[in-house]
Image 1 (cartoon, rainbow, N blue to C red):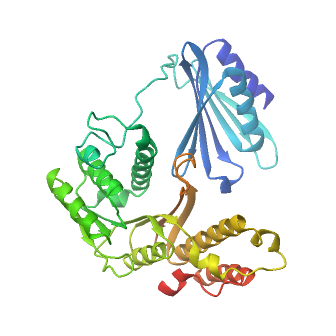
Image 2: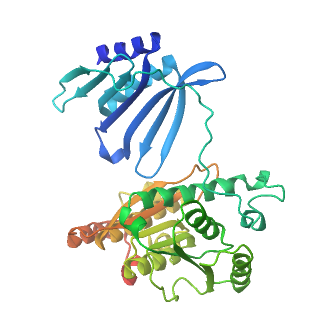
Image 3: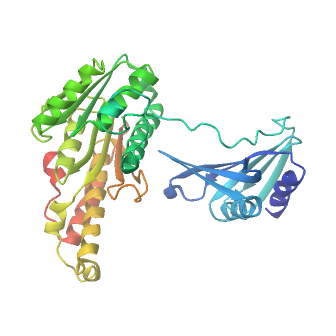
Length: 383
């Protein structure tokens, strides 16, 4: 490993370094799939850009060279088992086996030109310049993001980015002649308009998007705006998540549906055999009310804020397990920093056709309920 680190350092000194990829995580539970490291120049200073690639999102960090080299060594020591170094002189592969043996293999270079150090490349934007952004207050009348709207803008951008990533992971969905998307509890339609605009006007997809909202004034407002901006296949209907008769749906979205409304949305998505179910839960009252103290968990449940967080963890864990029991590969992750919203947990279910050991999964649910004195999770009743 030290020889490999020395080779990387020498490539920097000779300015032959093109890029480095670190892969094969030691612990799959971390969610980190790969790290890509490239040289960049920021305000005249050479640095290393680290892109940490996860299932549903990327995280980018810049380090000065010395700190970057330390980070590379730390990643190889603790997280990754393979390193592929690309220079203009040679490609060098470092591989660590499960038994702890290390190997280095060198071959002719893939790249013969030095890297482009330009850092300030235009970041991909998922929100275009459609008039709906101004009508919804996402942009001001001059097309700029208002100071008090930056958090909302980042959230919507992130939602669309995640949906875009999930679609690209499901090529069958992208090949369908028409995508049917339902946004349960669409509110003022921020995401509903944004995802329709992105898929239709940026990706040129044929989509039909429906927003479901209980408040009639918001339904009327959104339908009027949809007509005004020419979104022909975007409509809104009045209804509650629990009572709404869900039509054909490939992608079901429910963002910040309160308490058991999230469970209704998940259940309807499962019943409709939606290919993707995307939820950002809000409130966890049902489980919190039924939690009972136990000898083991008294220190947690005796404190209000900790009891609330424990209820959130239990509620969403059981939701994820019930999705898995019903044929969905499930991910739970933070989709945006708590700096922008406290409601930052997302549950994503991707439907598959593989055999599922439903009994074993339901035993896990039963064990969790027994440990915390929970009689029933609301989603169980619905599915």
